[in-house]
Image 1 (cartoon, rainbow, N blue to C red):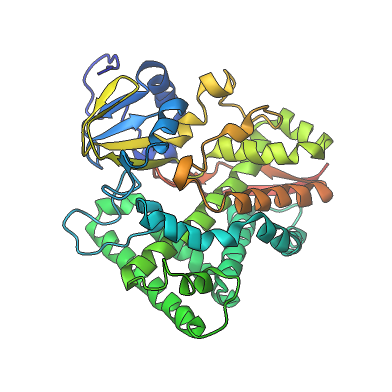
Image 2 (cartoon, rainbow, N blue to C red):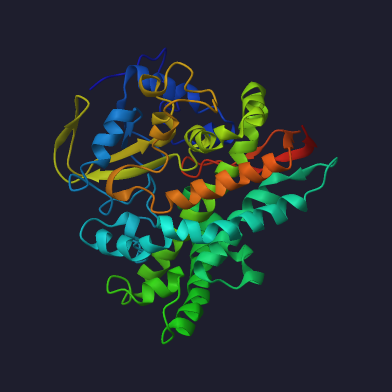
Length: 412
């Protein structure tokens, strides 16, 4: 096995990239840079989540994603942390964490909500809501972009996808934050609080389900589940598991990309100037910010048999963590300037932020559409978003995002 040179044996493994402070303090890039250079498939023997293999470069991640029967999403969970500790009776299976054939049928059920024709149908409404939010923003005073724009836009979108009561839509954000925080697994009291929040969510959605049960089909996710053979007979825990998946997938990812967008434009003023001068770069900028931000830092698999990956012997039962956040900075794919935000990057669409293979994000088109429309509407108003303080970042290795981002608006 490849080993990494160390000056001394530290109390904390510097190459355990699951440590939350790396993401809270935005210092994750350097350990990943060394991993890519010295040990792209590296065994971490001790972490707060247990032992795992760190896969930090592009090609081995694509290999793992391309072999879903060898690398299971179901056996050990699809993140570095299980949703519940070993021995717990609480299991909430969701289709991203299921293997074939269950995964195939359940994914096929919700996929019609994200087809190209659905994107066309939703575009005008997304644009109208984006315009309303931007037009309500103040100039000349500081406000939190995460709360006023990123959360509001994505929560509105989720409410529409679920046909969720509009006045209660911020509950979706609250449930998403509780469900997506993998650090909670380390704390018994917080685990109990999270479980209470998830049951609260399940009860709320059960009411929505019951109201649609004998109604005509409608183009929302609840109705699609009810009218599908693959998902109509889910038990309560599987129902809640799939709700968590769709809420976190639709909320955390797009909202943190929207926050990362204004942060990146502020950090790279030369790139912002290029974009402001040429709106034809918006589509590519959308792909580039999804690459640069990588709103979900990793996914995990468990080997179903002994195998070899990039020269390393992986044993059956080993957890393999695919660090999309690192693969999207892989110099062999994106060049020596991979850490930079570059609006005209030629191969920005090669990013792995949506995953690869059968588990690739089912809502990728919708995420891209929402970010592109946000950029278009900002450009139409010649709106420049200036970051005026350090962001508060999520302290976790799964959701890679922002708790708050203080900004002021100006025009160009």
